[in-house]
Image (spheres, rainbow, N blue to C red):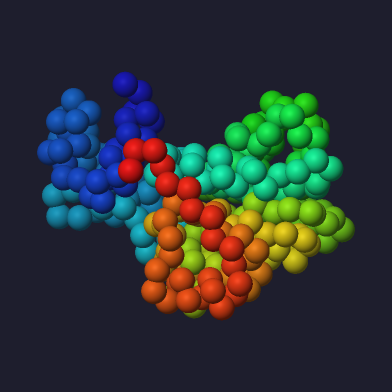
Length: 257
């Protein structure tokens, strides 16, 4: 197994199990403990895991940002179910913006092939998925962020300033109990803010692990959202925030639950 693939597997195992020991990882991946310790040191430098006594846990600090590679292996079944449900919102003739992200790409993968719409995105990865259908895809341009594979910066913001969308599929790193939508990076927060401002209808997509989480920068609130598509009913204060904001909640539970 190549080192990069092995490290990717380490991140996946640590994320899925909410922490692993060095011994567990060495046994699972059939390598030495010394190799795992080296991998964990490198992954901690990349902010993909946090070292703990004898192992590692997922990186979850408020200001810390997971990479696209780390996030794409988390909660795949839930994200696929959410993508299937959210894609039903797409209709003929619409201009549809797809935010960059590992949940929004599931919407793109399941977008109806028999529907004529204009897809727009700030993600080259999503553009490739959307381009598999007959529709031409518009990209915002801008600077590609290595960590998240999202296009940001002045060129991308200039594109956003002069465009409007019928429908937005929006991702978030966290939805706190007050209904604030947050993300770790200021440039991405600005892009998300512009998406929301320029969209007629906003569909927020995110699995239940986002509930109650808060990242560094707020870019919107549930007041800006029309529909939340997720894999579990919000409860407590978050449910109250959804009700107060008049957000329609669509729940799509994965088949394996």
